[in-house]
Length: 173
View 1 (cartoon, rainbow, N blue to C red):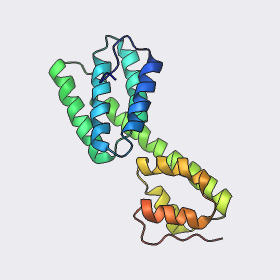
View 2 (tube, rainbow, N blue to C red; view 1 turned 90 degrees about the vertical axis):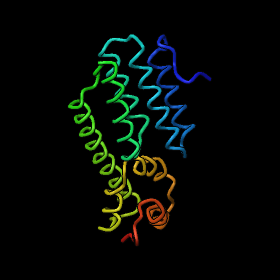
View 3 (spheres, rainbow, N blue to C red; view 1 turned 45 degrees about the vertical axis):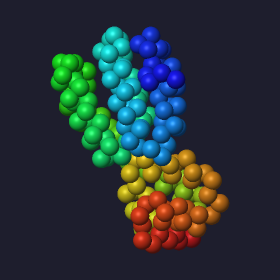
View 4 (cartoon, helix red, strand yellow; view 1 turned 120 degrees about the horizontal axis):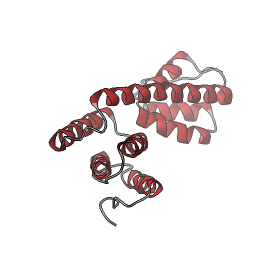
């Protein structure tokens, strides 16, 4: 398969390719960083309008999540790429706004997960609630996918202890 989509790919095709790359790099964050950079740079070079590029960039940025240290590398590389080509499609202020929006989305996602889990297993204790609120976006995304499979509160506690670096996570009933 080609490294990146041709500029003629539709937004849907770009989304599908990005999703495939996300699945491909599930456990390889260096490759995920590579693909996010490749797809974003290719998007910038596609000849699309600034509005289309920004909209597709926001989608790619949401879909291909990177942990903070990898995101910092991504931001530095993209800043360099933009400066070399004098093409600031997404300014640093817009990036800060995007980061703020992502942070708000993270808070909203943790709130929804907490509401579902409390409904499913009863009131969660403060340690469990705090552990869920501290989850980085990549772990919270995983939790939001697997929480429907938990059959008991102890399964949630086990998952949190393995994924949240929590020393002891207990649930009250």
